[in-house]
Amino acid sequence: MTNDGAIILFTIAYIFVQILLDSLKRCRARRQRWNVRASEMSKNTLNPIRAIVDGMKLTPNPEKPMIALSIGDPTVFGNLPTDDSVLQAMKDAIDSHKFNGYAPSVGYLQSREAVANFYSQAGAPLEAKDVILTSGCSQAIELAISALCNPGDNILVPCPGFSLYKTLAVSVGVQVKFYNLLPEKSWEVDLQHLESLIDDRTTCLIVNNPSNPCGSVFTKEHLRNILAVASRHCIPILADEIYGDMVFPSCEFHSLANLSSDVPILSCGGLAKRWLVPGWRMGWILIHDRNNIFGSEIREALVKLSQRILGACTVVQGALESILNNTQAEFYQSTIGFLKSNSEICFAELSTVPGLNPVMPSGAMYLMVGIEMEHFPEFQNDVDFTERLVTEQSVFCLPATAFEYPNFFRIVVTVPEEMMVEACGRIREFCARHYRPLSQESNDLDQ
Image (tube, rainbow, N blue to C red; front, side, top):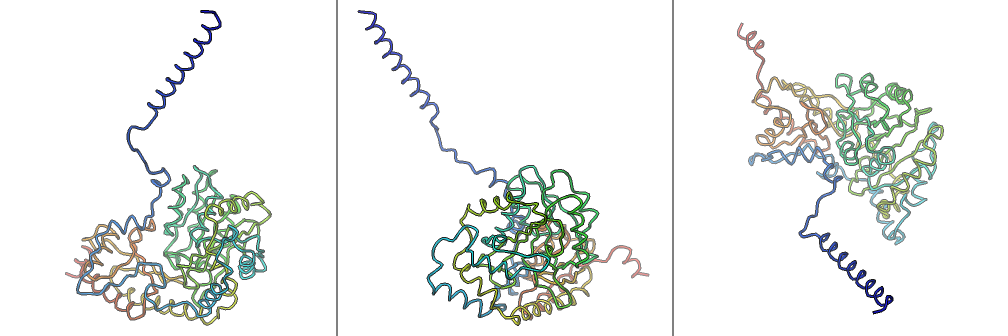
């Protein structure tokens, strides 16, 4: 055999061996069994309300019809329908056949202009470029957190506060620090405690006004004090104002952005509550960029993030201009009047129940009630208390542990008036059965 022939045979043998080795490697690399695992993000996602409620033993008293005071949906009982003009706007949008396709991920220009015009104020002007339409206020909050924060950063969240803030932040590796609200001061922010939590990884302060779950409405002076803290530490604010303007006649709602001279603000809102259509999933972010601090970077981040799901429902976008411009003031006033009346009934009834300390709200749809747990020794905590309230009285209030605030419960005041009166009567009966005076009080009675 010639040298050339040997070289050719060696080369062929070498290639064959390499092919065989590669085949063996692929065989070894091939999975021998199924091993599909959930993502780390999904494992880190937890809604405290669902976690707590799903773990409760909710077996209503079969002799009493259930009264659910736990769901923050004003449409549940049918007593608070949206305005006819809102429904007509949707019908017109559908009949036009113009809104059946995709819209830009940030929303139609005309719809964003409508929102900008509706919310522009002298101290906080808006243009269409300052508006991003979202799938409900929840997505607006998600986009804002995601645009401002990286894993390892931290955000400041009210306590008690809407549980979704924590759910969204923790799922993407952002730490949550809770700043206290003060029930004895109508749930104002404990400014000293707020400021003590700030460090060099704090990237966002969330302010919810009017508040869920508290129903509180901050004064102009208090909002300015909050802005002063953010200004001193150069921290942008995410203003959750989904209940904006849903305040009782004795109060006034002040948009945080209208009071800010230097703090940049992402204001989140939507149709859900004020227009009584939470299922329509229409929200927005209003970008108030004081001194061009957000600049193009944050705006571009919000646009890119909005492209992940291609935006809000196009039919609702098509109706948005008419909804904002044609809903009559009487509709808003009627809703607020009902919420105020129900809140007053609930507060008056429960204020005279031994062991309970309701805090009168000033807006939104909620009322918080403190439980003097030492007078109810049968129950370990507010979850146990509210669980037994369902079992005995078929009244379901949300334990405030779901809002990181134990020994309170939240009442939703959107139920029909007669149902509210009945529920308060049952709560009174429940407390009278389980209330126990303290030992010193017992001694005083014996004497």
